Each structure stands twice: as structure tokens, then as C-alpha cells.
Image (cartoon, rainbow, N blue to C red; front, side, top):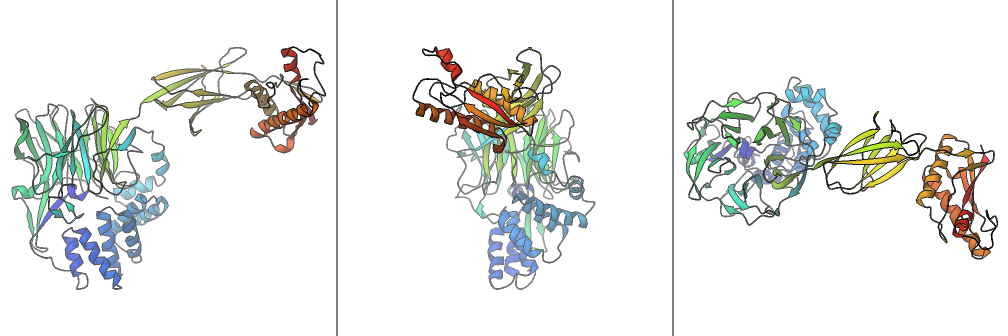
Length: 622
């Protein structure tokens, strides 16, 4: 969907427009004046009277599309598509479906669109890569996001820029302003708020010297804080085009500049390349103050709205605006540019492959590389746009309508770290190659798998300040699990010693190191688990092997008590083996109490008692 309020133009009504037909006359007038909320009411009134023809359904779909109500837009587009419509409607319907997480249905509509406009760049890109979603989902997480506290509850807030300790943003919260018909909200104003070191904000205040009765914002500020560029309407300069057919005054979004003097913004001036014929908006000034990036639909644009740049000369004059070309711009809309201190351009696009609506992309202008989708959670299935970043504070901001209204979110870079896992043979101390190293989060979600190289090493990328679990597997060795506490440095080294599986298999018994139990307990100890893992390994590789477990106690206690205790120990042993994937039909257990002591002693030492507390593994079937 489009942020048309700031991408294209604004309209001042002179008189009513000519109706499309007598039934839709009132609704069509409102639609042509971009008063979509009121137009919806009129079109819905027609449907209540039984008028659900294709024209009315499509108009309702278009209205809801433009105010970003994806659920209702989907419903009315679906009804309109009972008849064949223009290609752009199929494209809009596909985008709506994608925003509603209906990717399969969206792809079907994109195929219809592609069949109608096969040479369209959007169709060509889709047909080249129709199964794009898994790759998007696999993009490494770059930022953590959080909705900030100064958002209004039901009005639009977006376009945040942090300069020093002041956050500038655009909002329609000012109830004293007149309402505009597009979303039936107050006209947009520029606000500012103080940013505290703890991440909180003070109550926002109007930047009164920049605001008018029309729309203003977003802004960009020079590194020294003395110059501001901002978007506003050309009506303030009495610049507009008269549409004699619709009898409208059509104004544009234009760019303006002001300087900071005695704590106030003053000397507001229109930039020389503004025009009443096209829009210029969403400024972003380079750190050196020599280049201004902006969005425009001026002649030479590739799509609806493109990213442009213009040189700012040392004398304050401007060069000729330059389109950033088809690596960045598409036949769709590209807008809300932000240029970082290290020359990374962030921008929003609905023409490049994304999750839905507008997505935020980045491109390294130092390398002339291709734009990259920033991925989730910055991007969602809704509109995500107006990304900015403050390098000094190491915090960014983005805008999104994922919660229903345009709201501002903070974006903190994910602090990445690395875990170097080195695996050795615990007996020979030699390095082990081809060990499968699995990294899991604290909730046991698998995050990735690596194989150790010739140096016995596996390097895993993780997020800082989080806990992880590392599992190491190699055939012929007891697998090992290690808990990694919260990573607090860029690189951590983890040494893993795998114990080789060395067991003796006799005619009627598998000989393991004793599976000892603690006194008066039946739980499997860490040492016992390591031995049982050897049994599991043998049984996994000998599919016909059937085992009977005999569990014993020491001589202390009554016969009845020890019989029960050994039975519980047998059950624990069997359950452990079954938990590792061995069929329950291949292993059984029985407790023998103190009836078969290994060492029959009257005054046994603790070591002798421990030897008697054991399990034995008898082969029933090979």
C-alpha cells in the first residue's frame, strides 16, 4: 500500500466533481476528493440498498486499500473480482492478501497480474522468484524493535529522527487542526520530544514555527543542528494546478529549508526544484551536508515515486536532481530515504520483493550493491517505512501500521557474538572432525547446525547477552550437551571433550561401567547417563538387540524396601533408554533388591555399598 499523503499530492476542493453515474454520484465525489473515510460510508450505504455491482465493490476495495484497512480491502476486492478487472487491481489485491498473511492466494493473483502485464518489472521479478518467502524469513535478525511510549492511541505518528537528545516526528494528534478527508484525521504537524538516556521520552511539543494549517513533516537536520529540511504542502506558497474537469485545486508536497537562530527555526524557504506539477518530499541530508536525498514523482521517475538526490553546493545553491536509478527504484513506489553516517541508504519500497505493503531496504552506496530487505522484525506484512538511525546513541526508529495505525518503533541493533566450539577425543586428546554441532536457544529451538572442520572447530553466530545450549554428535562417541551462560563478549571459546564408546559385548551381557545410584535414590546420575548413552548407541546400531535390565541395591534396609527401590531403579533405567528413541519392546527391567549382592560383606565400606547399587544389562536376543 502507499503512504500517498506524503508521496504524491494534496487537493483543495473548489466545487463538486461530475458524478460517474446517478447511483454513485455522492460517493464518487468524495472518492475523487480523496475523502476515503466518507466515501466508504456512501458506498456501503449503496450496498445496504442492494447495489453490490463490480464498480461499487472495487471502489470500496480501493478506499480501504488507501486507508490501510487490509481486512476490508480484501473482502471487497474479492467480490469485485467476480468480473475481469484491470491489471493494477489484481496487483493491489495480491498485496492486500500478502498483508493478510495469505501468501498462496496472493501468488495466484500475482500470476493473473503477470499474465496481463508480462513485461511489467513487478511481474518479471515475481515470475523469476515466486517462492521468495522462505529466503525472506531466513534473513538474519538485525534489530530488536519496541513501540515507543509517545505514540498517540488512535492517531498517526511516524517519521522519527533523533538529533542529539531531541526526537523529531510527524503526528496527526493535534485536535485543534482541521481534519483532512483521506483518513479523517487532523492535518499533520511536526513535533519534538526530549530523549532521555534511559530510553524514555518527555511529553512531545509542537515545533510551532514550522507548522501551518496544512501538512508538515517528516524532517532532516544537518549534523551541526543549524539547518532543517522538511516536507510541507505547496498550497502555503499558493502553488497548485486547477483540474477543470474535476474542478479541483491540486497541490503538491514540497521541500522546505529553515535555519536555527536564537532557539527558533526561521528563514523558511522553498527549494528551487519544487514544482506545482510534481511532489518532492521526505528529505534526508548526508552527514557532510553536501547531498540531499528525497522522494519524488518528478519527470524521469521510473515508477510512481522514486528516490532522488541533489548536490548542495558550497555557496548554498543546488545542482540538478539525479534519479538513483533502477537498482533502487522500481515501477512501484520507493520513498522515505535515510542516509546513514557510513553511507548506507535505508528506504521503503513496495516494488521490491518483501513481506507485504511497504518494506524497509538497505543498500551500501559505497559498494554500489543491490538493495537488501532488512528482514523481520523491522519488516512485517503491513507498511513499514521511515527508518532512521542515530549512530552516537546506537538506536534507530521506524514507522509501521502493523498495529492498525501508523506508530513509531525504536530499533536497537542486535549485538552479535560468536561461539567457537573446539571438539576433541577425551581419551586421545586429538581433534575431532565432522562432529555435528547444534546450537539451541534457552527454549530448545534449533538455531543452526555446523560441522567441525579439519581443526576440530565450528564457529556459530549468536546474539549477545543470551543463553544457549550446544550439542555435539559424532558416530562412535557419547553425545554431549553443554549449557552456555549469557554471552557477554564478541567471541567465546567452548571446549568439548567427547568420550569414545568402548564397551564389551559378551554372549549374554553388555558390559558397561557400573550404572551406580546414589544412596536411597533411583534417579539416573550424570555418570550413569553417560554409560546408558553407550547402550543406546549399541542398540541403535544393532536393530535386533533386546535387553533385560537387572537393578540391585546394597545390603542396607529391609528386603521389601530394597525390592521396591531396585524396581524403581530398573524402571528409571528402562525409561531413560526409551527416551533416547529405543522402542519399549526392546528393553525391559526388573528389580532384584539385595538378593544378588556383588560383594557380600557384613560391615561394608561405602565403596562396597556403591558397587552393590548397580544395574546389569543382559542380552535376551541378538
